[in-house]
Image 1: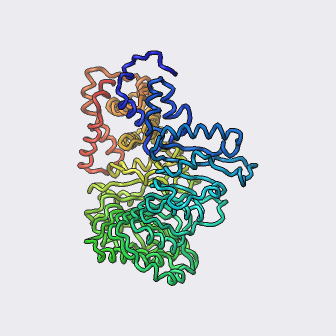
Image 2: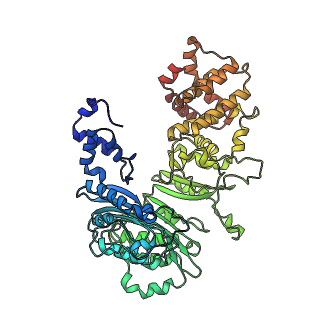
Image 3: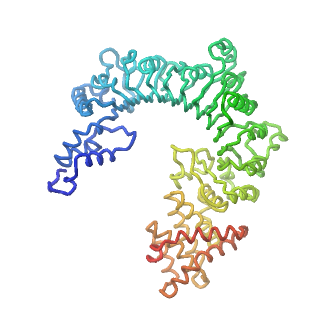
Length: 621
């Protein structure tokens, strides 16, 4: 839409400021889609001045993503598509480029082309030498026609791609001295072989490998990437013949020294007859700056994992590190008790990621085939006591496995007293909790109830609050829908209002935008069904708290409905009294219904609730 007012104030801004605003409208690390309704093309359709500024700002055109589906299926449009690409790339002048190439779903009747029909746009082929960031999600036959030669990618710093062995080798040869980030995506089923080629990139600092890679090739990769800082390998394969292969390669591997490695994540799949983690750690000499370790070993490698990790830390100390720097640790304990001696070596540990199964004594999850004495011999009280004795540890990650009973059971899950008794001292000492949602075996409604609690780009949300806040949060997130609905009945209604109030506070603190409105809905149902209007001595005070939350959510209908039913009315003379009495009234009701918290917790929570009472909330009420 063209502007009808050429003298708008915005048009008087200097060109540099307008260009900076345009750049702010494009997210960081974002591939622009060449489309009239997307930036930067949308800027060119507002006014002639905007059009001129957009065309002159080369930074706007440095990044683009291109779906090759029309190119593959509609050969008659190739000239038109080529012209559009040429026009876009030319506006970036001589700047380096960020390019993402992909092919969306092709029809089942599609036949892979060969010969002259298997081509890429010439404008893209000509621009690849300027690529700074490259993302390739292409079928194998497209790689057959693009075989980069040595040093033909001099600007490439970051590569994310689905590659077979041949294509990977070609690209590494074309950019091996400058590439710093490499992410190998899972190869499609049509690729003829698994990824097995070791990676040689001396400048590489960040590496993530999602396809299968053997222990031998992983060790060779670590040897040939001496500057590696972050290493993720999600499918490391170990098998019976691996030890003999490693012995043959002993002269080339020896003890690997990785002075820059800070983060290491490995998932090792151990097949029958393998040595598990032993093969890997036998050749990993030292990692003096390792600060985060996440390692899981399937089956046979678990028993020696703690010993292998302890030996690695000892070697790293002798290699020059004055003390272990490990601050984050997640590893699989297997079926043996937690190696307390190993954890005592971790003097600066801040985060211990603990996999727990909720049972009578919070024991770890074990296989049914394991002997009962061994299965019941591990009590996580040992873990909790160790954490309590450590002054360094600040965060405990708890993954709940089986927090709900069978769905067929009419009884809802409730936290057992053992759980709260173990967690209370840590909360009182200032320990934070992290709820990791993606691995929870809970009711299927959890993510639809509040998708904000599950962010795939992070490992979890830091929980800030008391033990009772933690309990209320777990109940709101993990209880099945039928249990939450039961709380609105007259039998359960008012007793759970304090718990819902906690849920609303937690939702506010942690930005769970869909959890608080749900709590408000249940507020209304609980109070509406339970209170008859004649026995509501503290109802006005409680409604002030609810109304403060409802005001933030623009849900005054929740409170108005209750007021109308009970014919309740606030007058100015009563407002100040309600304002001073609200927190104590609610907490007194909660203490009567919950029955366990201490005077210090009451004072702390009173201040917490009072601080959330805004002047705007009172004035609106």
